[in-house]
Amino acid sequence: MTDDELLRYSRHILLDEIGIEGQARWLQSHALIIGAGGLGSPVAMYLATAGVGHITLVDHDTVDVTNLQRQIAHTRARVGQTKAESARTTMLAINDGLRIDAVTQRADATLLDTLVAQADVVLDCTDNFATRHAVNAACVLHGKPLVSGAAIGFDGQISVYDTRDAAQPCYACGFPPESTFEE
Image (cartoon, rainbow, N blue to C red; front, side):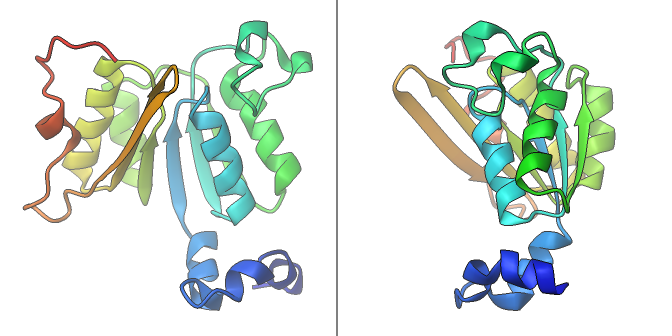
């Protein structure tokens, strides 16, 4: 780590659970975030702040003024920009020492097959059931841990699925694709 990184991350380094080794590992990690809206915005900002060295952010949507009260990575000046690029700008303003890739296309099975294979961890911050299942399928296929968050109104949930251990369930185990409930 450089002197600047040691200073920047000194509070993490002081924590026994992280230390220099943990922070160095974060700096070498690659997180894939699917969705840059209400959940993806703070997730992206926190991972950038914490020093996750490589972050890929996927979102095909554009910033709208109606997003601004809850999607904190975006600003009024960025209305009309893609959410992935807008969030990337915010993340680099927080921490310009990271590699942040903005992917401005829909997270379909083909894209996910490529991006999930390259990541160390995947964070699903989407708001649609079909995409959640596509993300889960790619994580299971490539043996990548999945952090899945959902929020509606004042309710939220977060789960971690790590099928690198074959005895552990995946997202589809708890929320089968044929379910009729809506998120």
